[in-house]
Image (cartoon, rainbow, N blue to C red; front, side, top):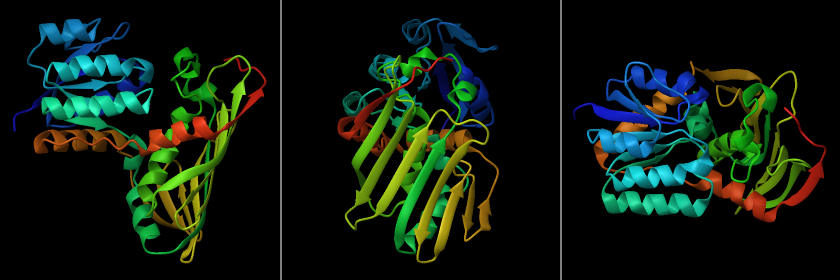
Length: 308
């Protein structure tokens, strides 16, 4: 198969830090264009809108959409209507319904749609999945706590409806949990803490279970200072499993059993090329569905105002 002519829409920090290096290192792609209201990528054609880009460059094969989720559906519709394969940054959209509509549209157009979950490609996630498949799980605790001022400074969209608030990082944990557990889980209770001046939560706690009665508790917080916490701990009959540093390391009973260099975004682009070549889509909405359930089921608690 010839190189995939790729365009990127929404040139921000995540694109510069992750997407551009991953694409540059992958021989399946040729980056030919970018569209962004404010950012530019040197050495390729740049546009201020996806409409102008698609009209000017019909040779584009695939589009990576990296703008905030509230604006992703409209751009995805334009790309799919033009017959382009589409890569959706996480979360894939602002609602479940709009992503389901995109999946149906991609199928009708005969192109690939990829709802990417980068944390699923963290180095130790598959090793954790294999470990849990081989032993009964007694309980699981998820602690995903970081400092929003460090990771998302002055990003107003993230506090607006559809921006998800603390679930922007929290959905990364849910993407791992839904990958490594042997059975589906569902929320039974939740508390969402909303700053009095914001429309999205700054912290959340969710209780989950499954058909076998699993005790799963998840804690998400954006007010963490000092050490950042991205840990999943499972008590099992084969010992205590700790998947730490966002899925980078796996330990059992305090012994490190798996650690490799991080390559989440290179792996995402490998997967995108794979499904394009196979004529398939990859749209797993389980992480986003759990967030939606937390909003539906959760008790809303108003906390002090948050200011960047």
